[in-house]
Length: 258
Image (cartoon, rainbow, N blue to C red; front, side, top):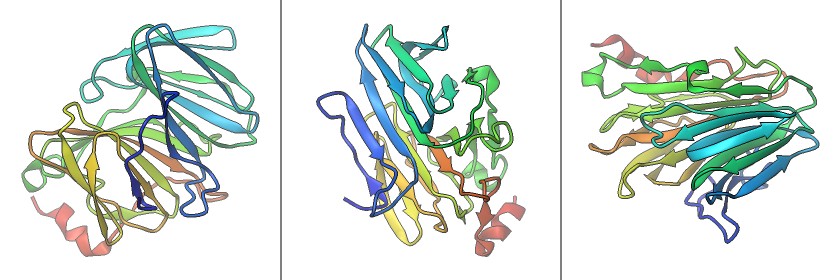
């Protein structure tokens, strides 16, 4: 298994670990895992030193925290936007499944105390990038749940990208010093694409994971007929939060030609 790309599986407890902070081989500075919940099942999450984002991938769940409750239903990652609860360290979150569901939990160390935020699809950006360029092969939909602009107290970024069928995303090739993790999903299990991290290439499949160190370019593509979803998660660095990308100057001309 590559240090940069993996095909993790759910264990007997319904947990799929994507990365662990402190990994000696390739430290993403975050703990990220996907959890399966059966209809009627509950899971509780609480971390004494870590902030946490709990994202509904598919299914129907109720989030409970601080005496509050919010619900979300999601049947399509491609067509429907995210429900995500973001809390500071020490906060307990219970997730109750009203149908078979999957959630993604992203954590990292953060001493800041901040108010919990529950994001609905209407609270997230839904930007179209690359439209009109190169027969729309660069066109993709980018949903930002939270980043430095709306959550400067956080040490993380969380969002989603829909790579349109037969197209590219994270394109033109770019990098940034902060580590980033991608978690991929296809609505058809035979869907596939390709991920390029620096000079290495990997086959994207449903449920696969890219772990991108700072300083490596990371464009993606998907096969015709298969729109591709991925959750993108960045860890800010001390004194150096992620706010922008650094494009590979060799490809700047591509953005200027229609």
